[in-house]
Length: 56
Picture 1 (cartoon, rainbow, N blue to C red):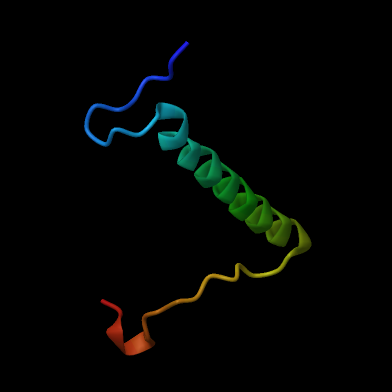
Picture 2: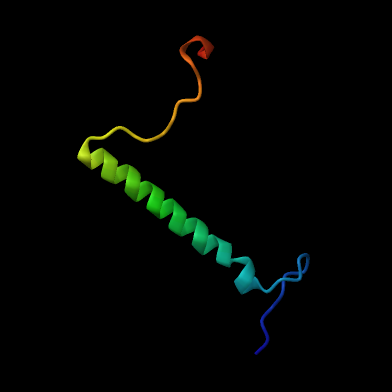
């Protein structure tokens, strides 16, 4: 059985959609880390890029 290729890129679909698995794992790890920090009572490690004078 031959694997189908995308019409535009000419790549196999299993390679094309493998980026979804990497993206999903990265999102899961990020949100587990945020939840873990929330349970432990720590602040989120996110950085605020605006200074106080730049806020509307």
